Length: 187
Image 1 (cartoon, rainbow, N blue to C red):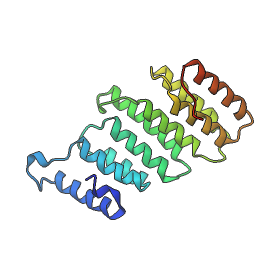
Image 2: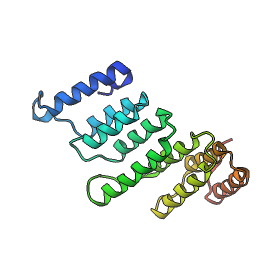
Image 3: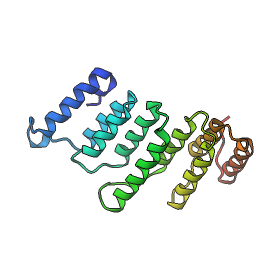
């Protein structure tokens, strides 16, 4: 599946292989597992096919893990859809709910939140992108996940993308957080 997921035609072939595995065309040990689904979703993400990736997530016969969810979030980022940031936030709320009910193996992790921030950083002209990024970082901390350097950098990028008049001030505040946390900022 990994080799197939590297091209548009390959993704179609991996979809068929996954379907054949689900239909039992291979012996019992040939049934798709969470890695099979995640690998197919990663191929869709490379092509920015977010709706298709999400469809696989919600129809897969295995319980997804953080890698699976994050692959779908990456597909939304690469889709360049204007609604990607909102969709990513929605999917994170679904992931959290499914984790709490046992329908997902993992809760949102640092990468999950970084993808949410990347969605807002890629939303050019959304004046409130930085404000949403701040809310995402608060949610992250409230859920016991410490921001790392990519999170801080992506939050700064979201503020810059939004063009909000407070962006420069907020970037300075975030740089102070980076120093306070003992992280080395990118040059």
